[in-house]
Amino acid sequence: MHLLVVAAIEAEAAHVPDGLEVLVTGVGKSLAAVQVTRAICEHPRRDELVVVNIGTAGALRDDVTGLHEIGTAINHDLSAEPIRQLGLDPREVVELPGGHATVLASGDLFVTDPVVRSALAQRAHLVDMEGYAIALACTELGVPVHLVKVVSDNADETAHDWSAAVDGCARLLGDWLGPFAARH
Image (cartoon, rainbow, N blue to C red):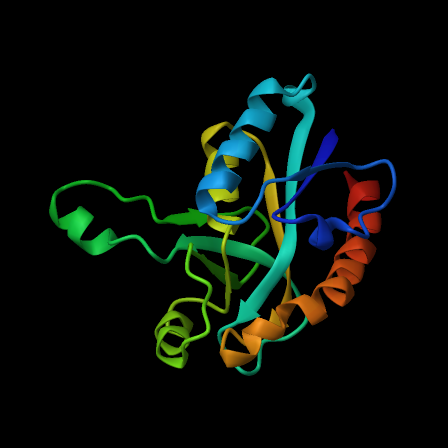
């Protein structure tokens, strides 16, 4: 087993334990999908690869705090229902192994609007901008993937204070990775 830790930005990976390989993708689903796909396809140990996506996320519900392993990732800014009505499968949901209950909504929208937050809260616990794309890329390429997110804000007007919370979140993620890396 070879662990590849994936984060959107360097600040989220600032406290990854020494010796672990880190890939920084950039912000958003497209960059994340391209960078992860490239890394997997070009990786010399592809057959042993396990991807762990770490990062911050906005809480869509007031009672959601702390660190979460994700069980389901959804693409929230895709018009899935109209695509389904055309007889096509939009594949907007990726179920992850492990039986974790937390649902992550991913999209290229930085959520700060309370109306958007409320609508997303009907489907998910957390929101980010890369998790779904990373989960889909790994699933399509047959690489095991885990998503681990720490709540950095409430996906509302306070989300703009995200930068003040990133280092603390990165520390929690780094602490979580230590035992995870030892298990795999």
